[in-house]
Image 1 (cartoon, helix red, strand yellow):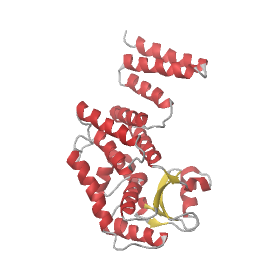
Image 2 (cartoon, helix red, strand yellow):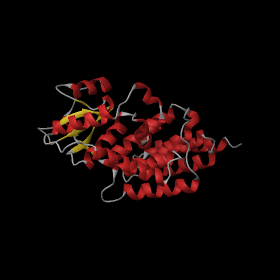
Image 3 (cartoon, one colour):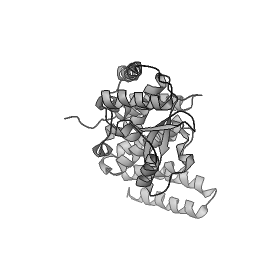
Length: 284
């Protein structure tokens, strides 16, 4: 039975985080590299050889695309046939309960994962094969798109790459949110937005498991390394430190966050300072 991944040594973790920040701030951030570095922060077993092996597996899969399809639909069908049918990449409800479902190297190994990680596999394999492919961040369910607007074809990697037709996308959005599909939801998702959403999923997984607050903490730390992130993440990090019993560190971060908030809302800042005082009081 495979146990949950555990983080690497502090030295290894610091090096991986440095590389993650560097890649995230590069001119053209590489999606597969960023996703694999997330995995390296999560899993002590993912060393340099493992990172290289995962990239080579994506290259190998791309080399299995049997021909260079012409139309967007032909690309979608070719990737479905290869990844969904031949290699069995897909998802199931149980995958939402596993941290490995958010780690690209594990998704490549298990051929199972969350919609967004399976979509990363589709994106990276299709991109390497020359497809006009991009991620589509539908609310509650990530899919991939092929071709330009007007010729766009959507596929659902979680469902083995099923090619969506008619109002399938509307049904997915309605099932997730109860709302309708807006054209803006079909815009290509930038690599950093994909990574941010993956880290949100990891934080949600950890929030439901207080005993794995370490996972929530590294997910926040990586999100804070992205060039664009919500200021409230710092408040969330401070609260998590307090929950972990790191009262002084949490209080210091709460005070720092209060200073930022105070520039626009002094009342809210004072509430946060009150939380900092309460955290310090727990030391007594």
